[in-house]
Image (cartoon, rainbow over all chains, first blue to last red; front, top):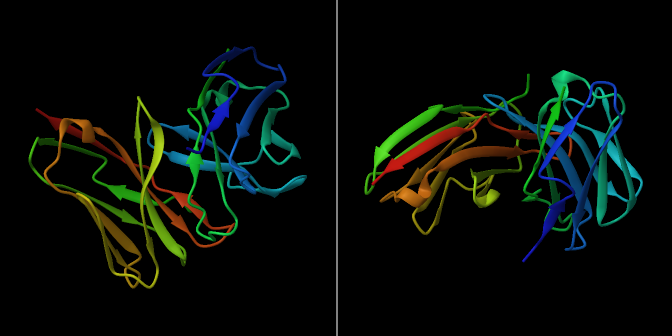
Length: 114
Length: 110
C-alpha cells in the first residue's frame, strides 16, 4: 500500500510564527502536492513539485513556500503564520509515468493559528 | 476562480437508494477523477475517466463524462451507510490545470 504520512495531525501556532509541515511518501512518486481544504471551497492547490528541488505555484501560493530536498519528502512552510491560514492541510503524491495525476493523500494536518 | 463546482452540496438518502452527484469544470481535461473523504480513511481515489471515454463502471460506481458540457456525474447504486462521506471531483488537464470541486456531502441513513 502507498503510504503518505504527515508530521502532525493537529498543530496550534501563534500569529507570526514560522511553521513547517512535513510530508513523506514511500512509493518513489515523482509528483508531490500541498493543498489546503476549507469548508465550502474544496481543496485548493498551494504548491506542486514534480522532482527534487523543482516546484510550481498552485492557485494560492501567497504566504507559503515549499522545499523538496529529497524525493520522498515535501515540506510546506508558512513564513509568518496568520489567522487566515487556519485550515486543514493535505499532502498528496502521484507517479509521473501514469500521466493522470491520480493522487494518494496523507491524513491531513489541522492547523490553528491564534 | 477556476474552482470546479459540484451539486448538490449535500444529499441525504436511505440505505438501498441510489445517489447521484454532479460536477462541472471549466478547463479542458485529460481525465476526470472522483475521490471520497471520510473521517476514517481520509481522501481516497475512487475512479478515473479519460476525456475520450463517456462512461465507466467500477463495482457500485458509475461515472459519466460529457466533455461538450464540461460535466460529469457519479452514481452510487444501492447505497450503504458506509458510503456516508464527502465526494469530490478532480479535473486533470496537465500540471497547471489540477482542480478539485467543492464537494458533495452524502449521508446514507440505515
